[in-house]
Length: 116
Image (tube, rainbow, N blue to C red; front, side, top):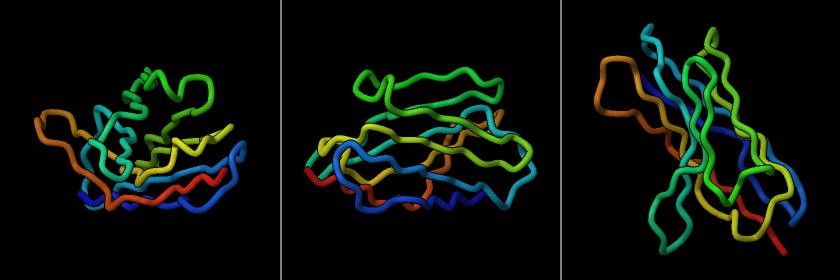
């Protein structure tokens, strides 16, 4: 399976971006899909995750500002990011875990830069 993320870019503080991630190359269903991010010099951290049934979990730092969603029929996961802050600047990686697997698949990352 391959994950292709898109939608990153440069935005001013307070602005919005929508990230998309498409999974291809497998007919398997995905137990969980989500987004992580990694800022320069920092460890990769969970941003948001969504189960096949639609249950979601968010990092405290993005609650109320970011919304994760998925389209199971299209094997897509999205991250709507509103009220962006400079500290949201990072490379965002999409993530997908297939049912019955212990190892997740990662996308290539998309850079989000928020200017102050």
